[in-house]
Length: 99
Image (cartoon, rainbow, N blue to C red; front, top):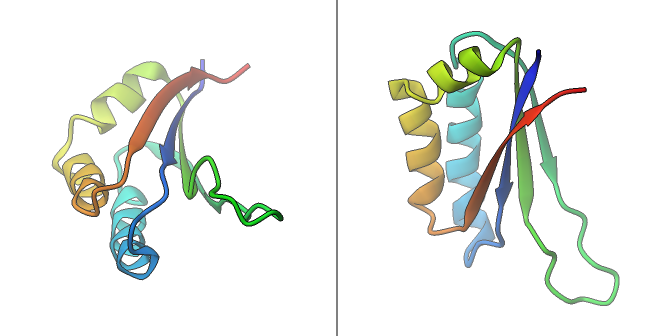
C-alpha cells in the first residue's frame, strides 16, 4: 500500500529566513531514497488577516510504509528535518495509508 508522509509546518517568526531554509530542505527531500513524488504547498493567507493554521505543507509519497520508514531514518532525512527545525517552527508529521 502506498504511503504518504505529510509535514504540516507552523507559521515562522521570520518568513524570509524560513523560506531560505525550506528551499534547502525541499531540495534535500527530493533525494530521499525511494521517494516517488513530492508535493509542496504554501497555505493561503486568511482573508480577515488572522494567522493561518499552518504556513506550509510538504507531502512525500512512497510505494510502501517500509520505504517511507526507511527513508526517514537516513542522513538525508536528518538534513530535511534538521534544516526545518533550525528555523524554530512547529512541525507535525503524519504517515498516511493512501486509499
